[in-house]
Every structure is written in C-alpha cells, then in structure tokens.
Length: 201
Picture 1 (cartoon, rainbow, N blue to C red):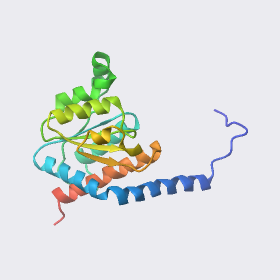
Picture 2 (picture 1 turned 90 degrees about the horizontal axis):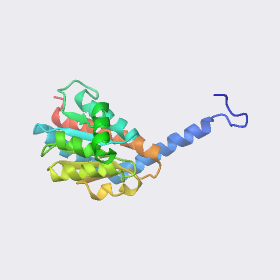
Picture 3 (picture 1 turned 90 degrees about the vertical axis):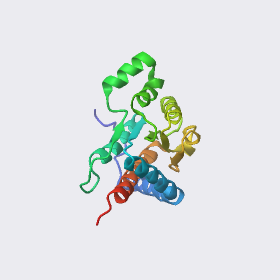
Picture 4 (picture 1 turned 180 degrees about the vertical axis):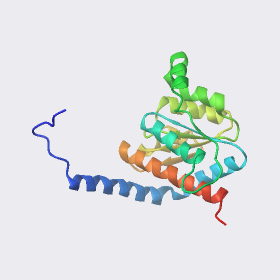
C-alpha cells in the first residue's frame, strides 16, 4: 500500500517516547505489585510441587500471552530443568471452534476448565480490561472446582479483580502497555518459580 502523501515519517523521538512510557508503567508496577507477584509465584510453586498444573487463558493478544507464558514452563526459561505442567486453553483451534459453535463464545474457557481443571490447579486469567465475559465465566468455574485463581489485568482490574484470589493489575489504561507488562510479569513468575523449585547448588 503506498504511503499517504501527507503522512509524517516515523520518528526516533516518538519511538523513544513509547519505550519510555512502557518503562514507566513497569516501574509503577514494580512499586505497586512486586509483593503480589511474589505471592502469585508462591501459589504456583505450591501447585507444581504437589503435581498440579497451571491453566492459562485470554482473548486476542492475551491468548498469545497465555501461550507464551505456558511455554516458559513446559519448555525452559533460561536453564535446563524438568518440564512443568502448564496448559494454554487458547491453543487448540478445533476445541475452541467446536465449543464456540456448540456452547457460545462466552463458554469456551469455562468448558475447557471443566475438562482440564482439578482442585489445587492454578487458573491464570489474562485480560487487559478485566471484563471479558468468557474469562469471567471461566474464573467462576475455576473457583467452584477448587482451583487457585490469579488474574493478569489492567485498567483498574475490572470485574475480574474481585473474582480471583490474587489480581496483578498493571497501572495503565493503554492496552499495549498492559500487554507488555503482562509478559514481564510472566517472565518474573517463571524466574521465581524456577529459583524456588530448582535452586542452583
């Protein structure tokens, strides 16, 4: 597509501004949520040590984040160690389309939690707004089945923050900045879990 003749070229100043805003949000997150992130890591350590698993879910970019974070546990983050059981409920397109067709989009994650969630597992709900109907429905199922519940959200937490055991709320209303911080949280969780379960001798 040809560039519109009146469009301004991308500028280094704007790139710097966006990167600095992303860093600012993460600094605020560090101040407001480091203790909560450590508590979330403790829940995961407890679950993995007991042979339980993490189940992650979200929509759009949050679906991609769920898959990314799950892969850090089933694969490895920075050093070799045993695989940890984590499942992104967003990854199987046949399941998602079948469930969406048969039960409606609002029930896709709830149904998958019914299939895969067991007491003591950890459900990690990812939603930038905290108001996604299918994420809220899944959290309700998780709580009813005795799963621990963690939310990664933003925009003040939305309705999700009050529905989970532990809400990690990014202090921003900007979807891009929230998603960037969600991946940072995921990496921090993975590092803390590795250090607790597989300490370097």
